[in-house]
Length: 303
Image (cartoon, rainbow, N blue to C red; front, side, top):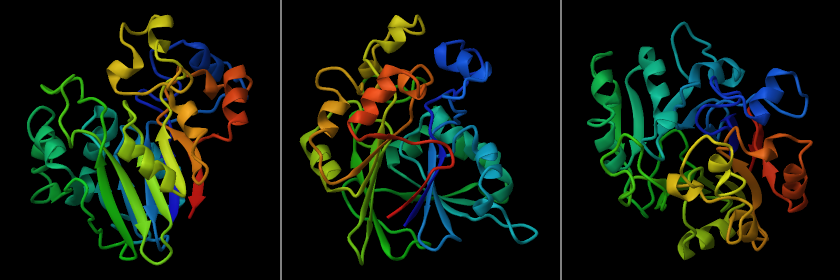
């Protein structure tokens, strides 16, 4: 399996258009230790020709432009053969509108996400006006395997995560199972496993057990500390209120990842305020000392 990181940032990207935090300011001033980052998305393939896209960020057109392996070879075609939504967040779904010229798209998501994208944030409804219907909906059933035809040698599993529903949702602060999922992708022949969970608010026993079995773990690295947004004056909410477990605090993600021996540990969905995004910072050096990597746009991973 080939995994390409299209976008490694949380919502807003880096630099965020209205942000002058240390990282956004540093990037604009040309600081070489801070990278440009678009909003979170990955794509995977088993043959390098047909790709399964996880999430469609608002930056999807820039991401495709920066990824020659996704460029069309025929007069009209797309290399993206399926789309998986792990939630209904704006920064994970809005880009579907940018792909309207390629409708219809086979979309895999839970019934909870499908409900949101037909009602509160009706992307699916809007796309019905393109090419006879914008999406071919495939329901993901939690904790049961599903297959995607362009990756016949792999099996997919969706696990419910405790995070949060989108800010626009009536289920905000009272999320349902299925509002947020992590996805496990298993090679049927080799048993090699990817676990992708860019939004993680609570560590549960069954999630930790699956994390330990992964060969590659792409996991939520949104915030360094739980009060990061409050300290910077950008929010009144803790990271856990927004559905993101912090990295450094007691009981945080670093503490858990230190206990996991098998996986390659890579952070994704990293907020522009997170000090680890400046490679000259003490937080970056501390993170790397734990054997944890930071994904970046254009990163390629092979399993």
